[in-house]
Image 1 (cartoon, protein in one colour):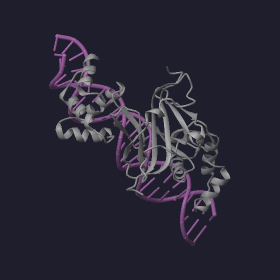
Image 2 (spheres, chains in turn red, cyan, yellow, brown; image 1 turned 180 degrees about the vertical axis):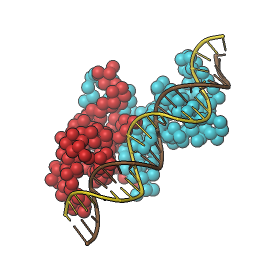
Image 3 (cartoon, protein in one colour; image 1 turned 45 degrees about the horizontal axis):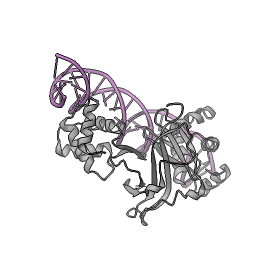
Image 4 (cartoon, protein in one colour; image 1 turned 90 degrees about the vertical axis):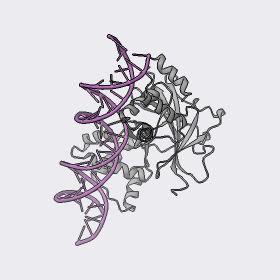
Length: 138
Length: 138
DNA sequence: GTTGGTGCAAATAGTTTGCACAGTT
DNA sequence: AACTGTGCAAACTATTTGCACCAAC
């Protein structure tokens, strides 16, 4: 996700409104490093904005994802997680504690240049997931 | 997934029973190239075994996954898909039609040797997903 | 006969939607 | 004033579980 000012600008340019609820969500995502689920985000924003609804969080996440400001991670079969870090990187996923971690990938790896992708297929993003057990859970 | 005979042998060795329902499921998976969801598999097996229940299909898929005979793919946020092909390969996922395709990966890519994975993390499998739009849907 | 499997029905959980009212522009 | 956003409640969908009966071994 970009700077809040830039995201706000994009929303306004798209005719979307800036509400206190949305600003709280932007703020939280900006500082986040934990790959939260929609519900995680909801429960966090609740602390700052006790009257916010899950629906609002949910719809704002959809909008941000559709704008390409954050990634929806399909890594945990039980629920979606969101990642505001749009740089090329991979993830670890622990099958036991369900924790998601970041893996830095050297830029020369060119994740987006996967071999054998048909020319006709338009790649938006490449997700790389190492699935297994973290140190704690072994 | 291995040959049916080998899978049957593994089940017996683990004290698990071989039923007509399970054999139908094994057969179907063996010939499958389409990354079906649990429900896809259920509807296919129904044709051969009209009295089978979703629960039976579901539990057998869990067992096969836990044995490492097939992979559960977290690629479609809406549902899990299963892949009996356990060789190192990647997938394409079309956001529009939800189709999953295979991508061959040269063995020298060493998918399982992702850089920067903490020593303490035990990697079971690495999933690589190119997410975007297929030729048809563009 | 013992033990695990099957199938039904119900519970659970995450996600998504319709709608009336409120807030932003 | 026009139009989008919010929040509630309900619907939906996939997944998971409890349990009585059945079948493989």
